[in-house]
Image (spheres, helix red, strand yellow):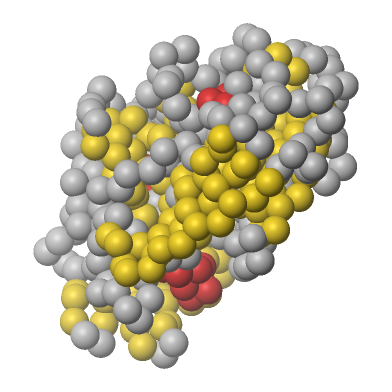
Length: 422
């Protein structure tokens, strides 16, 4: 067990006098981290590829309290500030503070992370503080300024991977789906994402006849897209139509790795818009939403369980014309990442809101979906090299302050987050 403690100190920016000091205990979400490690192939047979700061080296400050357990920032909560291990704010967004390497304490029995926020940073109402990964703390999301953060992705927590649209990883298994006529071949390999795409000595394959399962009269498209679900199944999309008009059904297959069975499912386009039905413009989230774009690149989302359209987002296009793969990332808890022209957005299906993400200001980096299974991972590409960012935005801890803090532009603030064995 791990115990967490938060201390926030507000100081007058001129005199340095302490104006307010708040201390509070936290809820450590060990299950969230365990789920992430499992999904990334971290098990007793592999050497861990992370350091402490990869897992908890980021901080997020929110304007509202958060109920545990919660993997991600829930709807109705806004980020006030953020910070990341060993990152100083040099002309970065106003929400971001600077990590204090001098005052940090790193020992086997005590980890004390210190973040400094000056008068222009993290101003507002602070009701909760959460630890996240170093990359998550550096990226932040739902920021008010909307400016981009130049993110250093060259960290120990990245590993080069190679996955195509018809591949995905669940646990330590890589699944690749190939369609020839009506025969679906499922190839399986045991791999460790934490050390790149490393063959672990186990492979097999199975052929599944879809002729009696596919929709009547449909011709299957060999350009498959696959999406791991929260229940362990893998959703397979074979685009039958490039245009899906209102009231048309969108078909998909669900593959169960435990017994190699497959079933046909569908959701109806209940919108008034014609949807793009090609394989690069359709996504399925782990928690049963269907997401696509209409002909004008505006995002549409549907709840598969009841067919209800949950979002008709027409404020701005959320798809890049130049994309040659699916730049959307399916989170869980009703959240979804969309990416257009190097601008990132988190879409919240539960309240139909769209929140910006700080993505890299460099043209060399683009957030992409490499179909890693878990709702706790993203990936990015630098030129032609795809790499995995482990759990960038999850909530490792939830610390609801006993007394909220209101910071303004006349104050400096220090946030000290301490982890010790319970």
